Image (cartoon, rainbow, N blue to C red; front, side, top):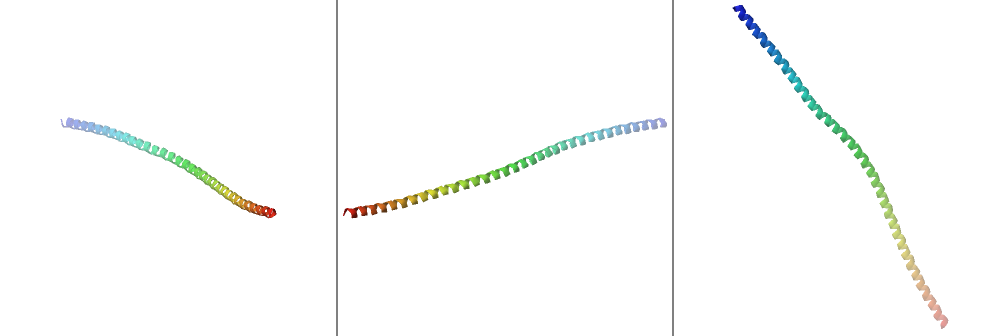
Length: 125
């Protein structure tokens, strides 16, 4: 009887050990699955961040090129406007010069008329 009780006790202990080992393996498998799922989830976020960073880098380079081109174009426009402004000043100077010459010519013409009238009156008298 004691021997039978001992055997039953050992059999129950073996069952408990097997059950405990089975549960331990299941717990390890579940923990492994959870860890893999978490790592996969994190890797998706990291991969997306990497893709976004590459896109941003590309956009920054494009923006730098466009800004440089815009700066060059703006400098050309400024140069053209300054040239145009200078041409307008020169036209204004020529117009002013023409007016001055015209006034001088009128003055001379008037003086010549007075002289001519004076000579005609002297000849008539």
